[in-house]
Image (tube, rainbow, N blue to C red; front, side, top):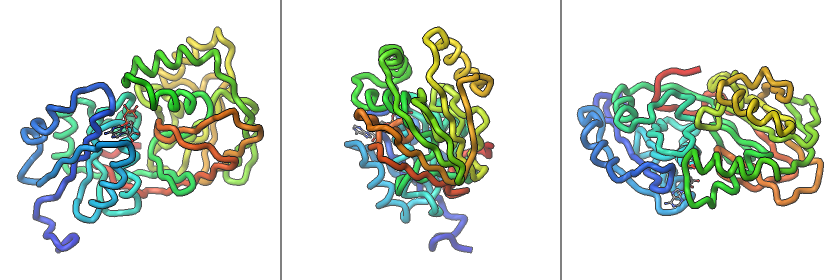
Length: 306
Ligand SMILES: Nc1ncnc2c1ncn2[C@@H]1O[C@H](COP(=O)(O)OP(=O)(O)OP(=O)(O)O)[C@@H](O)[C@H]1O
């Protein structure tokens, strides 16, 4: 039996793509950890570093057919870049979480300890997950408009990464934020979202750092979760934080959620320089954003999750 010309018994080839700018952790010891803990009886490997934003897309695309597994070492933005070209292919996405929020890795229960994440790769387990397409751009975790997109826009140029940088920006911006009106079309059903705090389209449950925006989302169910959070009074912010970090947002009267296979977000007001975000990175907003689930379209090196 052969697999792309190699015998199944031969070693699998892994390409590790390291984003040196992601998160706050030092990436210098990663090559030594790979050399020490990756099972060389099962795998041969190469390592590359990105040198600019977006380069991981090109590296992943150029190497997709030469490697069995391409591992993103970074956060959700790096995973997004690596995973795009792997969607609908046989090449497996691996993840060593080194980002600021690590939303997808947390959902997939991939350890944030690098040694443990390498040992998970050694287990050779594969699960298949959904992805979501916005126009032609694929995402894996969460995208949206509103306050989270505003923070993603500011975070992209923030000097410091990591949870505390997110938290500081959130506190600075939350009272200043103003929204616009949107219409949602979820599998043909129209909904009005009048100046919401945010609208999130979720494949996994969380943005990262255990902030759960879609506590009931399943990553392999062929559906995206559409979450609308209305503007909340100032006194409610601590409750909102509590609900997000305990995965109980569905109990909030300011929160509504639906599921769908095809979703449109239409702008009903003129923009004031708004952006959207895709997997935590800013992305240009358009008058109509069309989203579609790609069921079970990406193989990921991790244990089965829901
Ligand atoms: N060498 C580089 N220099 C500058 N930016 C880079 C480089 N390599 C990748 N990037 C960009 O860094 C951005 C942020 O990376 P990533 O999202 O992985 O980390 P993070 O934002 O710290 O973590 P998370 O998304 O989990 O919160 C990505 O959008 C990617 O395009």
